[in-house]
Image (cartoon, rainbow, N blue to C red; front, side):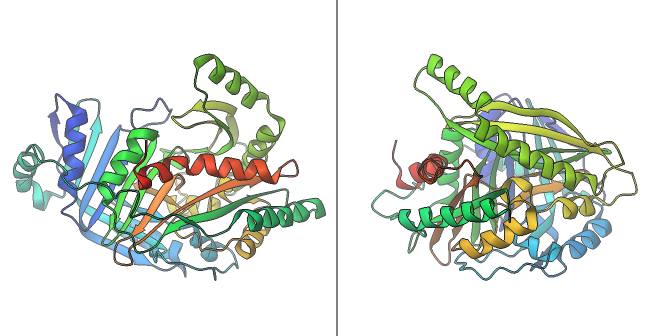
Amino acid sequence: MQRTNHKIQVQNIAVFKTQLLIWAQQFKKVVWLDSNNYPLNHSSFDAVLAVDVFSEIETNYFGAFNKLKEYQTRVKDYIFGYLSYDLKNDVEAISSKNFDNLHFPDLYFFQPKKIFFIKGNTVEIKYIIDFQQEIDSDISEINQPTTNNQRPTSNNQVKIKLRIHKDAYFEKINTILNHIHRGDIYEANFCQEFYSKNTTINPLAIYQNLNAISKPPFATFLKINDKFLLSASPERYLKKEGLTIISEPIKGTEKRAETIEEDQQLIKALEKNPKERAENIMIVDLVRNDLSRAAIKGSVKVDELCKVYTFKQVHQLISTISCKVSKNTHPVEIIKNTFPMGSMTGAPKISAMNIMEELEETKRGLYSGAVGYFTPKGDFDFNVIIRSILYNATKKYVSYSVGGAITAQSIPEKEYEECLLKAKAMKQVLLNTN
């Protein structure tokens, strides 16, 4: 598929990004990925917008990876979309019977007619060649001084409820600890949902506010008809760059402090915290094992172990694992071999997923899945869907979930506090509080 390679220079890129996302709202399918200029390695661009469907694939989990493989091979173009957590059922003999009030398809990708890549002050515009005559009129429309007049919902309209109440949460954590002490698993990522029914929100305004207070490296605004993902994710799942594969799991969390001095003390404490480091190292081992299934023998290595990265709300421990693959290895197979990401499952993976399926009250769906894209050369980059608000506009249902890694050293009260810390930004923007 031929595409234009049209470049423009933009003086005020922040304003252009805002206008671009407002312009995108006219389309039924939108993927916006923004790094917020966070200083992470392996970044291909600062932001990208993909809109307007030329072709697409939507499916449930059954045979999903084979269908995606066939679609990506046939199209050989940029495709943008997501993998929901429940694609685990395609990889392993696992099922999802938990409650779901969001109803996102298990897998969705589309080949956009129009893509905007932003790097510095340069905007590279890649339209399918048949639509290149629309570039000038689209740029003119984007640059119109429109404003997003709709306001986010006020706090008396959004009533956030817990799917699992505190006492039940403690019971479930103790059940997980019993599994760990018995040797069934040694780490599990247990997730809980917060939700609001009969709620109408302005997705764009909520996303803008969430992004403004979080500034994460893997922010996402995704729209699939009446369904929205508004994500402030700090985590990369997997990237393919040539023959190199990179995974950057996050495990280990500490709150931010009011002063620089206190913040530095918290960073040092997190670096040395045996429980948080153990959480991270267990997942590093799992990721190494997952990557080795597609990697050239002996190429899997840990580039960075338990390094502290600081975000607006929290400090996190991030490790970087990489490997090399053969040029004959299909990109979709690499994802299938490592999905779902270990940071959202626990270890051993299948046992942890089965136990979480029993203990969690809701189907995860898009939460703890991945959003990203493939390039025409078969490279890809996907985030981990955490710190995210999910919205079904037709059902007027708003949901956000948070999770934490449970290990033998876990204290239920502290795990609960960590969940509330991770949920803080989503709650803040939905209740429109400062």
